[in-house]
Length: 320
Image (cartoon, rainbow, N blue to C red; front, side, top):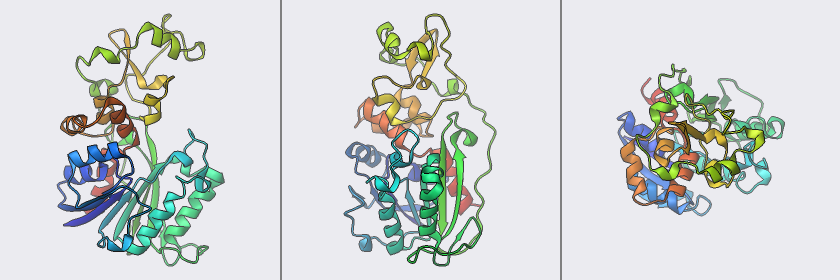
């Protein structure tokens, strides 16, 4: 029985992945400051405890975990944001993650962030994170390095950028995954799989007409620089979705990559379609829909780790 806990838990991608793999597990705790994400999470999972803030939890009271997962906030490392990194309060939450690992000493952890983490501050941010995790006897991708951090965690860490489209879901979503083990072991990330589905395979039949864009909205969104929707110059890919993220659906002038053309009409992806594009089952979506609005469901999909990618990683850790 795997004892697991998650920070920045969102809607529970790691928990969903463990269920997909039929791996016996016990959800010791979850934690998310977003009260709406918490509502969805608790509709889908039953942790012993749910914490609202990683910065106020007493780490010493948490039983030692077999698996710890944290998709720590990515806004400060993202190309889309101001890229404040450790100077941004959200960026420094990594140190709360590191402190919890130091105190709890989980057998394995999985951390996730945007690909931009690698290039932030000319690679210095990524270097600092991996130094904190590995210095003091650990390794990075199988190699021992020179210690630059006096109080490193000493874990054996493997990192790689994985794309959702390589694991069965037609969404172009690149994320860096950082997998760490307390004790030495070799680890290979899951191999890419041929993509058999297209975006059109993920779409709802007869979605509510409210998702269809009015002519007024079309004129507002599709500026000349983005193409003329009337003349047919505006092409929208129906084979693979661009990266689903909360910002796209909450801003007034949304990214046109997240619109689709169906029956000669341009519409938004629906919340259900976004959840599908993150690997969640329809039944899971409908449970969350009972307690949340469309806006929150969009946001939750955009902030989640793709279930299929998490499933592939956990399969390599526990079943290979």
